[in-house]
Length: 238
Image (cartoon, rainbow, N blue to C red; front, side, top):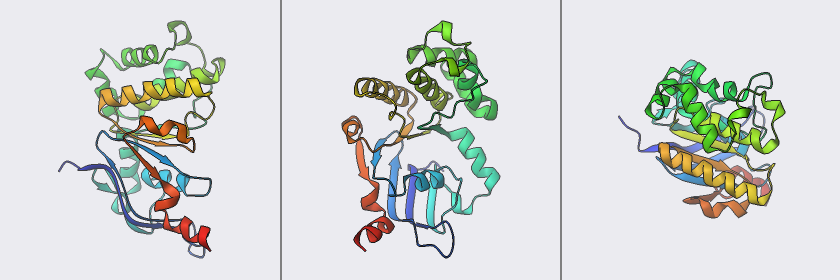
């Protein structure tokens, strides 16, 4: 059965150890299919923990974390790994590029781990390599840079390589964690426009996490994590 939401979180509670207080208590959070959601909140509001739950890296103690209709609380680790590889593209604040690989090799990494994403490249291009080249060109990475190691690129170029890696193979969900924090305001908006354009082209849902609220007007919906995370609200009001 097709899911009605890309991500649906209901009545979730999570803590790192049984003797610690809850760090997440979220009655409901959803991301629609094809929707772009701007999620903001101060340090300590639970952003990193939430992304770990969505990625299936950790499991909620209570409630449901549904990703494309699959409840991660009742899914084996190997199946969560496969969902993460096939259906979720991650764009990290620190980029997490592999330093000894070339630009194009970094972009192609998801296709090495996911046959599905490699096959979905063929919807746009003749091969995964051709699709990697297309995305990099669209993100203004010059052809003469493709065989260089990523460590030879500027921070802005590395960021765009990481973006191409996250969207190659058209995963249904893109999770971006503070991806523009290393850029100035002008480059932030230019990059965001490209990311939103590519997500729209592939009908990917975008969960964009940032503390920089200057960016939120570009998104279809905005949500404050510190307001929906009741554990943070209780700690703040204590």
